[in-house]
Each structure stands twice: as structure tokens, then as C-alpha cells.
Amino acid sequence: MYDKNNIFAKILRGEIPCDKIYEDKFALAFKDINPQAKIHVLVIPKGAYVDMNDFAANAKSDEIEGLIRALGKVADILGVSTTGYRYLGNNGRDGGQEVPHLHFHIFGGEKLGRMIHK
Ligand code: AMP
Image 1 (cartoon, rainbow, N blue to C red):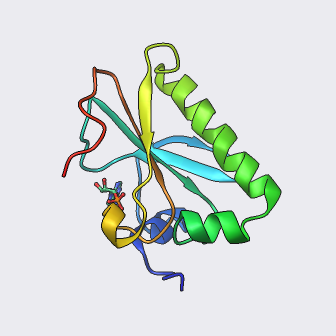
Image 2: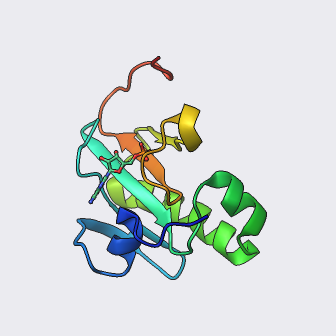
């Protein structure tokens, strides 16, 4: 069940500001408030989807395409397409998801560490 009052829903409604990197019909990208790398940006769909399971099952084809294309555009805008980057999605309890609106993290701007920390 989607919580309309989660922080990213508030950002999408313009109730809370964000440091915007990119926006189109399907996606919004903004800087993470607590960066874990030199570059740390979040890319979120505009639709109300809790997580990847919700998105994969319920999003329309154009929403799915739009989010993936936005990820590529944001990497270009950030200048990490050539240097490399990591995109990461925390999903659910074991994935450590804190905000219940689907989001991808993009990390870059430096060499990144190991893939998984426990
Ligand atoms: P996750 O653990 O994958 O749900 O990550 C949620 C991310 O959202 C964390 O990296 C937070 O630092 C980030 N975050 C929380 N609130 C805000 C906000 N208002 N603006 C930007 N990033 C935020």
C-alpha cells in the first residue's frame, strides 16, 4: 500500500524542496541529502510505486521505459557515463529501503568500494 505522505511523494508534489538534476514526464532526479559518494543522486518515477515489485507488476510500459531512459540521461548529465558509476535500488526490509517510493541511487565521481556491505 503506497503511503502518499512519504518524503519523495512530498518532493514530487513540490511540498518539500529538492536539489533537482533532471525532470521529465516520467522521472525526477535530485541530489541525495546525505551523500555516500562524491556524486550521489536519486532517480524516482513520478508514479506512485512503493518498490520494484510494485513497479514491475503495475507500471505501464511507457513509465518503465521512461524511468530507465531517465537513468541513462542522468548519468550523462552527471558526467559519469564515461567514468563509470553504480546504480543501486534498496528494496524492502532486507534491502534496507527507508523511503517507500521506488528510487534508484546513482553513485559516482570516484572509485567505489565493494558491491555489498553487511
Ligand atoms: P533508501 O535507504 O534506499 O530508502 O534511501 C533513501 C535515501 O533518501 C537516503 O539515501 C536518504 O539520504 C535520502 N533522502 C531522504 N530524504 C531526502 C530528501 N528530503 N532529499 C534528498 N534525499 C533524501
